[in-house]
Image 1 (cartoon, one colour):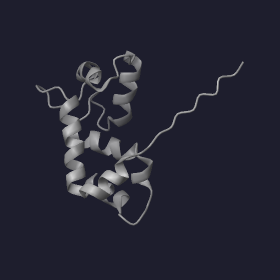
Image 2 (cartoon, rainbow, N blue to C red):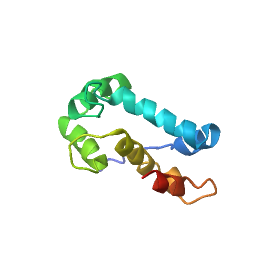
Image 3 (tube, rainbow, N blue to C red):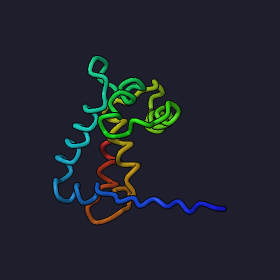
Image 4 (cartoon, helix red, strand yellow):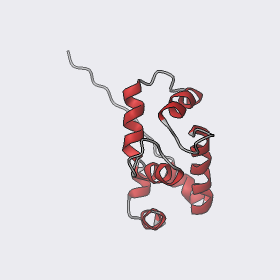
Length: 113
């Protein structure tokens, strides 16, 4: 017996970018970063993501899933995400923003990097 598991993913980032504009959109991403970060370190750490993910309704995340999330965006290898790494990761995870289209979001994120 095979399970047919499909997930519907709606990428809201392109419409947010269009509605808010690039600077305000990045401001919203930065707000998300601050929600998840360790206040003392100014980084999203394993501990801060585990603790704060409950706020987002993700209380059943396994430790290995949290480690994978961090390693996906950890560009400097320190085991945590700084604000730039978080914003870059959010862009990379949004198929709608990474498509080369009229709003130039791909070019914008490349300049941000």
